[in-house]
Image (cartoon, rainbow, N blue to C red; front, side, top):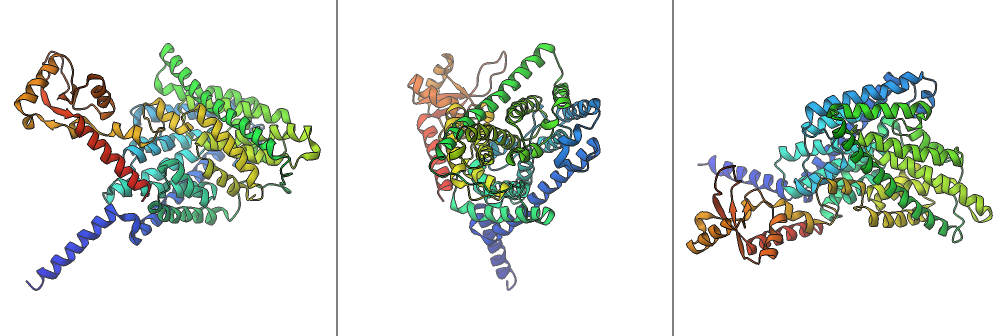
Amino acid sequence: MIISEPWGRLTASCGRGWDVLRHRGPGQVLFWFIALMIGIGAGLAALLFRKAIEWLQTALYGTEDVNLLHSFATTLPWYSVLLIPVLGGGTVGLILHYFTPDGRVRSVSDVIEGAALNDGRVEKKAGIASMLCSWITLSTGGSTGREGPVVHIAAMMSSWVSNLIRADGITGRDLLGCAVAAAVSASFNAPIAGALFALEVVLRHFALHAFAPIVIASAAGTVINRLAFGDVTEFSLPGTTVVEFYLELPAFLILGLVCGLVAVVTMRCIFWSDDLGTRLQNRLNLPHWLRPAAAGILLGALAIEFPHIIGVGYETTSLALTGNLLLSEAVVFAVLKVAALSITMAGRMGGGVFSPSLMIGALTGLAFGLIATGLFPDHSGAFTLYALAGMGAVAASVLGAPISTTLIVFELTGDWQTGLAVMVSVSISTAVASKLVHRSFFLSQLERRNVHLAAGPQAYLLAMFRVQGVMRKAADLGPEVTAFCEEMIGQELYVTTTSTLETVLPLFDKSGVSYVPVISVVEEGKDPVLQGALFHVDALKAYNRALAATAAEEHG
């Protein structure tokens, strides 16, 4: 008795603490400690992924400095430049064939889907296969970026932690945001942009309860980067970038318009290439695992003459930001990068779109700046400033993230003096692009997979509720309702237990009935069996509760 009473109080206290961690984690110091650990883990994962790419690139291409890969590639025999992407593509195809159900590499769009529809969780097995594919792709000449794979790797880590502590949806999403923020921060040495990227792109809200742990994780990821590389920016800008204020700002408005259109063209080229690749694959009866190898052939052939397309493209981006390219070179390289990116993505080879969009934007901005300053030399600042603004404008439009992209441009370059010019270009470009696509590349990807997140919770929440969880069971129906349900089944007016409210609610509006019968999935040759009935009022109540919970999370 003396021992059992204190022991009972202790176990009850531990139980309450566990419940607090699961359901109200963001307000607790312990949750912040978990956020810190996730930040360190995600930062280390981003660092190791970057080092792994550099190691394999060095081993395959023989260069001593992977940041100068395209210059070194010009010294290699043509057959080496051709064969390395082919071998990489073939390996990627085999991994996807054996370890993913659909032969598709997971990336940022899957993390966004996990945050919205799966309580902050993402796939593990397919995610690990995607990590290997992206590593091989980026190391063997694939023309994508490393931020997409890094974000998904971090999301897998947070999913493991969420499952370990059996976190609910809110806590799982906040942990996911912590992991993403740390991964982005560690990749680009950009703590402010990393935190805002997680909020703006992945969680898609700026709730206060998520802010503190995400900032802690983002800071931890940045520390990992700086311990490895020092407190340096990714790109160094020579001299000063001064805007000839008021007179020059209209030029940045026009640049924003141009960059918005370039971003839309880039995204549509990727999707068009993917559709074309699928049609050709079906027409030629090409095995799924050969598709990346076929893309590797095209990339290798393109890289023989233009090695600038190989890999992430930081060397070419640096040349654009420092103004060390001619107008014709900037235009040609931008077009080729769009083509190479489209081929890589259509070939299902892995990688992200952020770094390529930075390169395309810098080249677009440089070309525009060379023309603008040439036409009005007496009213213009440095033409490299246009490259800086263009880099942010195209990337912001592709990612659908004007706030975090504006900040990441500043943090990548260390140039905070030209904020007005960059913000003007970014705002115009994102406004233009959002009218022509589903708000961003990632949301457009999801839309193509019939995952409707672009319109907000009011659109996608209905798809989360299956009829089976909302219906009234057959045993609870009165004889009058049961009889009418049998009559409706005879008229083929029914839904199955696996249907969602997204498909059922329009049926109520069309038929005018207050409830519909629910049957099990009909097997061939067998009569449908009544499982229950879904009442219109029950469906609306479930939807309303979900909307209220989402609003509470986003404004809490």
